[in-house]
Image 1 (cartoon, rainbow, N blue to C red):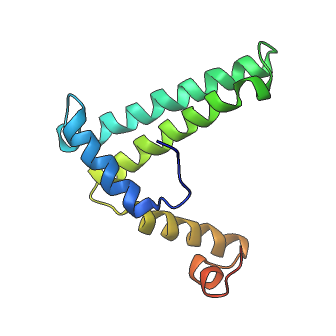
Image 2 (cartoon, rainbow, N blue to C red):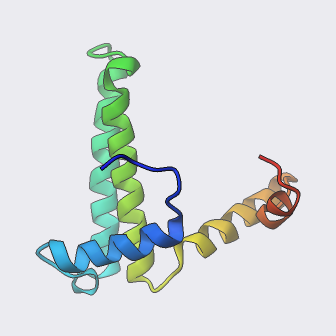
Length: 119
């Protein structure tokens, strides 16, 4: 299936939780949040291992770009599952945290940018 840019976090979160509940050896709520956090750490470790190998000269960034993108996607997927496990809406929490940091650094919040169609 060809990836599409039309996927929203809201749709992804629903499908991601559904896939977890139907296709893996455990359901979303079988794992406590601590185990989801460890899964995130594991994927982040895989990402860091790739970056380490680039830094030490084993590979170039161009050679491992796709592998890095896949590891980042794995981290994001597990982060989304942890959000679901915590009964949180990924979109809402991302926007909330983005706006907290934006306020701290003097940057417009997300609704302002969306209303004014700034990209």
